Image 1 (tube, rainbow, N blue to C red):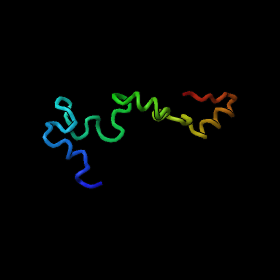
Image 2: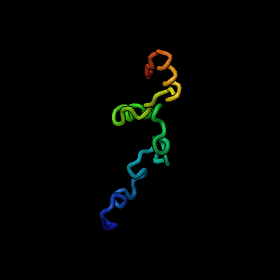
Image 3: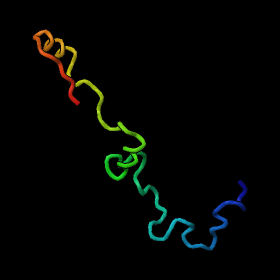
Length: 79
């Protein structure tokens, strides 16, 4: 796009260039990258990335599982 059609040309003479005086256009207002997924960006992560947080694994080793089965006990998975 040529320079004369850019939004910046239209904003000349207007104080905040569309970024507002109060909030201001600062570097990383929400944090960098995926910062705040458990805190201030919780809704976004829950809505668009369900299951992003948490573990999906067995919390017991194969060896321990074998010993329990040999002893006649049942191995139950816990979330």
